[in-house]
Length: 262
Image (cartoon, rainbow, N blue to C red; front, side, top):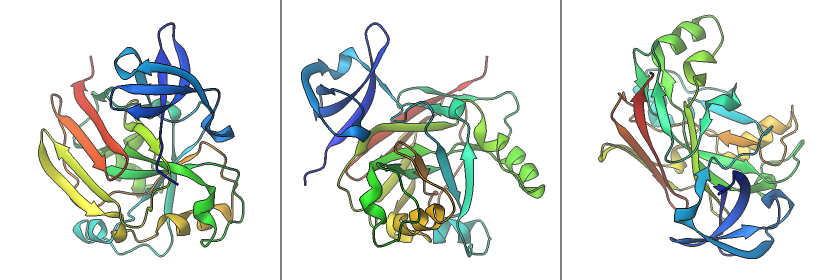
């Protein structure tokens, strides 16, 4: 099947809808949620007339994976994990493409992390790696923005929440792309136009299918849940005034500017 790109958008009047991208300028609204099937309504809108939102519904979970690229572990001088390192993020950290990342008053060392996001399409429990991708609706792009000083202090006590969970620290988007092969997608992160990360998902320590198998052995993944699969090597600092653009083959570009907290 051909790849389809699904967006969540805000229409005039603050009506949230899901839609399919027809072309660079046009979307076609869906009759309901993409997790119930991709049913076009026949209603079309100009992209310029809507605001693209993060492609995640209220109540869905954002589950992140730490240290999941071989080269990133090496640049961090850390041993490769023997099992996935998982953590949840608050929904208030999530923003969409074009939204601002707010550099908090507490920020000392804030860094970007370009990542592939996996969008679960149907209820998954005790799923094998061989069948795991059948439970995926599609893929999106994420930026796991992190305040390192706070994160390191938390990790010393066995926790990881505030350093990665500030409001606006989890941009997602611009869409959910279906029918992609997640094993060898090119990910590129640019800061102010300069390439900072350039790697393929073939460097993942725990590939997408293995992550789903591991998680669903313990917990049920629900439609709409998103797994952030970790970041490749090349992470670096960001500051107010910077613009971060992350691209992944077949998905598009997630772009966000950084502003100082008021």
